[in-house]
Length: 360
Ligand SMILES: NC(=O)c1ccc[n+]([C@@H]2O[C@H](COP(=O)([O-])OP(=O)(O)OC[C@H]3O[C@@H](n4cnc5c(N)ncnc54)[C@H](OP(=O)(O)O)[C@@H]3O)[C@@H](O)[C@H]2O)c1
Image 1 (cartoon, protein in one colour):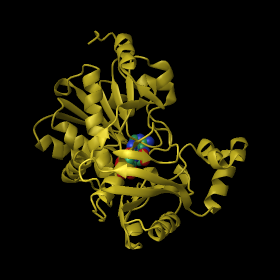
Image 2: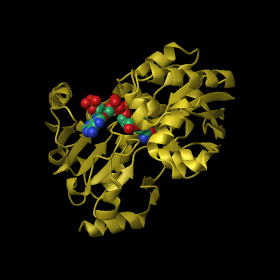
Image 3: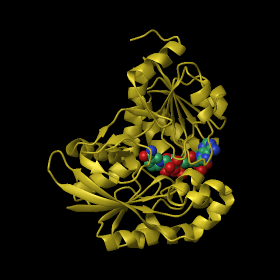
């Protein structure tokens, strides 16, 4: 039996905390945040039933709750955040885990797991390699479903200077006609733009203006660390496909209400092999997980207790290696979700109709 742990944190602060402390529903968010910070990390659930399709190897794991909000993870001094994450890691060690994954913004804070790994006797991974692999695969499939050939598409990557965004942009630039790199600091995007231009495939543009960056985009991969939504209905063209990999989400809920003619899908919903039971509802259907969770699990199943993805750089080779391990053990992109609901053939047909794209 292989063992892993995965760190999670509240994302929708009131809603997530109220699952354990119902009184939180009635308190202001600032009060909840101040209370959370005083808590110690603890085990949230025991994950059971995971089994490799090819080797038969089994794995169990634990979700460990890091009591910090998205804002706290990004704004508190790094040392405060590292201390909490190292406490999570000590719990993981005591449980016998050989590797610990860092979920959502726990991998964005500070140096992307390096300090945490240095202070633990087990491996640590951010999960960003497999997140890149599934984001690109998901975005391409979404475009296909909407009848947008990527070779003719304008593709925008929002948060392209970031760890996940950068490598997504490199992979998408191999196939797209035009690529637009969007961030909050254009100068930070220029080195990547030069790298992509040297590939001599896509036309490359850079912008720090989200409206301008998305105006002509047929396919958008958005993966920023913004704590509030940054993509609004007025930013999107008719028939656009948006793959939102960010947690918290980058796409405003207004888009779901007001733009029936665009397809928004969540990046990285992965089917986990075996009879996986997470014993915790993080908003996905049974037996499915985020890509970053899946990276942690597949490394454990393969007995690779190494700090596979650490720091802020993810290489194409790392993304490809996690895809290889996923194929080996039977992890697969599992359908699509959009704002907590499954994306069905009917959803696609309705979006195509609203966007005046002929039915398939
Ligand atoms: N779905 C999954 O399975 C999964 C797995 C792992 C991570 N994630 C999520 O992926 C996201 C990014 O992670 P990462 O490791 O790539 O983070 P990162 O390396 O910190 O990169 C985030 C990028 O977002 C940019 N950004 C932040 N606020 C912005 C704004 N308001 N407008 C435009 N750009 C903005 C940052 O700009 P600067 O360069 O100027 O700072 C940075 O380049 C996070 O939300 C994380 O929770 C999801």
